[in-house]
Image 1 (spheres, rainbow, N blue to C red):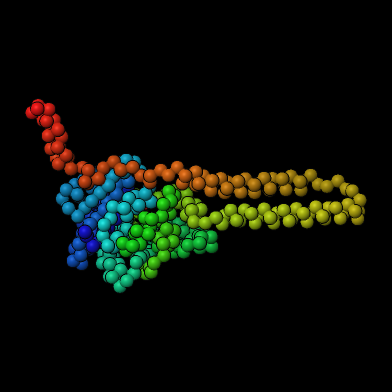
Image 2: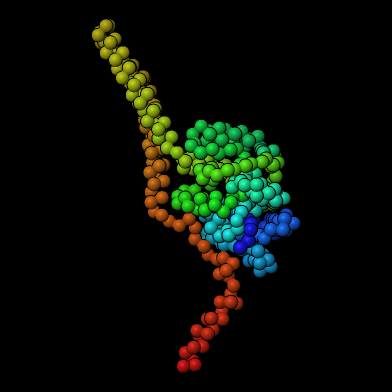
Length: 327
Ligand code: UDP
Ligand code: MG
């Protein structure tokens, strides 16, 4: 059993994967610990799969799993955690945005008794728009979520074996790792490093994908949006009762007058909007229940380094083929 497992989700990382591998090996070898590198090919359509196959043949510490299509980074990380065998598991991106030279430091902190070591990036080098958006998002998340999620604390972290077991014991289909890591607890320590730009290739997180990821994060960890809908409804109901009382009082005091048509329309449109939003929130949760209840696997594996050893497989097949001729 290796002491350290590095888990790397890769989606179309053809251009950087070799450089990444060399950098990780270079920073881990001097530590004198035994290690394995678990690559998960998340349905890449460039040559990533081929490169992983080559790496695995050249280096026995490389293990990989290929998905049958793109299942997303969360699924890839889950597959990687399941694959890993080390006492300490480090999750890293393949694009060298998570500097491999920090791993020895993380291992040291782990040996000082921490179950989670989080490398937290600052936001240098990002566009002001994205910076502002992220900051606003984390402020929102902190208000709404029952778990603590820090800005810049991404998926670059070390987990001890028991922390990994805890994460793997959570059965949900809709996985939001940042929340899960925080949910499991254990003693965690974090340090900050300067943000690095990706070495080559392109980011897979456009604005829309990021927004959906954000919504997932908010909804998968609490039912506060539902609570908010109830509160809004209650206040509106109270306001309506108050308004009705006021109308009755004014009729009693001043006699009947013809009330405005504009106010009526405003109230109807406003309320229908609110109802639609509330329904949407409820629908989102129902959708989640539906998803969870299907209990589908998180991913489908098409190939691993253990399954791909064609020469080893062909021999038993020959034996089977020869058997009838002998008898
Ligand atoms: N990734 C993945 N599946 C996906 C999208 C991304 O496995 O569907 C991997 C990707 O290969 C990289 C990591 O997740 O190793 C982070 O992706 P990226 O660098 O595109 O995100 P960013 O750093 O821009 O947030
Ligand atoms: Mg990146």
